[in-house]
Image (cartoon, rainbow, N blue to C red; front, side, top):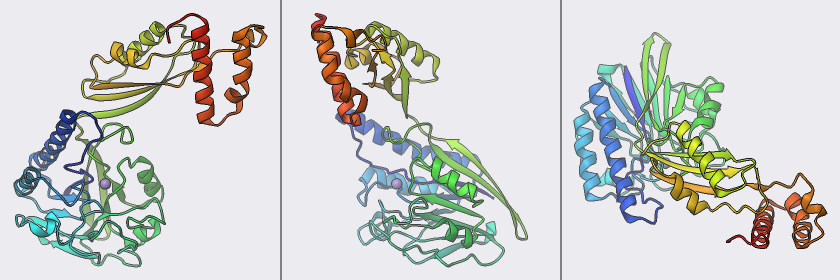
Length: 374
Ligand SMILES: [Mn+2]
C-alpha cells in the first residue's frame, strides 16, 4: 500500500512581509503546492492520502481556497483522511463542519480516538480531531491497535514536549499504541523530533510543512511517501521524502575573516552564493562573522543590493568582531586607544546584547575617527 503523508500546509496563512504582493504570491504558491500534492497522488498510484492537521492556518478559509480544497480532494480519487489540528480544529464554524466533501474524504470529528476502515486496502486509520485551539489530553494514551490489518495513526500532536498544550503524545504511548505507521503533524521543522522517535525504534514521522514561511522553517520541504507491506504481524515500512516546496528559506553563516573593506565582504559573499546551489526561489539570510578590520562597519543594505542577483531575496546580518590581536589599540595612547579601553571589558565579558552594542560602538567610533562615512 502506498500512502502520501502531508500536513501543516497552513493554507491562507498571512505571511510576515511588508510587501502585500509578496504575501499574495506566497498564498498562491501554497495553493499550487496543494494541487501539486494531489497531482502526485494521482500520477503515482497512491492508495491513501493522509493529512495530519493544520491544512488551514485558521478556521477561516477564503472562498477561493475552500473551492480549491473540495475540488482537489475529489480529484485525488483515492481515500483521504484528515485529522484537524490546532489551527483548523473541528468546531461548529469550521470548514470541516460547514462544507460537504466528496465521498472519498474522511474527517475525524472528535477528540475521542476513532478509526476509518478501508477494506479494499486491508487498512484501518486511527485518529482524532482537535476541537479547539488547545488539547491537554492524549487520545491514544493507554490504547492499542486491534487486529492484523495495516494499522495507521493519522494525528496532530506534540511528541517533543510532555507539557505541550497541543496534545502531548508521549513516545512511550505512541510505541505502545502499536501502529505500523504514525503520520504526525504539528512540528514544522521536524528533523530533531523525527530523529528522537526513530532512535526509539518507533515507526512514525512528522511530515513538516511542505513550504517554509520564514527563516524558522528552512530548507527544502515536502511530504512522505510511505509504502507498507504486511504479512501476518510483520509490517515492512519504507519511507521516502518527496520535495514539494517552491520557494526555500536558507539561513547561513559566512566567515569573512580579515575583511578590510565592504568590497572584500561583497566579493566573499558573491563567491559563497555562486558556490552554493541557491536559485531564484531562495530566500537567503547570511550572518557575516569572523574578525575584520576594527573600523569596518558592514554596510548590510549595500551588500544586499550588490549580491542579491539570482536570489529571491537576500538579508545580510553583521555579526563580525573587530580584529584586535595585534594589541595595537591597547597600546594606542590616543583617542582610538581610549575608546577601545572603555569598551574592551564589555566586548569581552558582556551579555550577547551588550557585546553587540559595544562592538558596534567601537566600530562606529573608529570609523568616525578614521574620517570614514558612517
Ligand atoms: Mn502547524
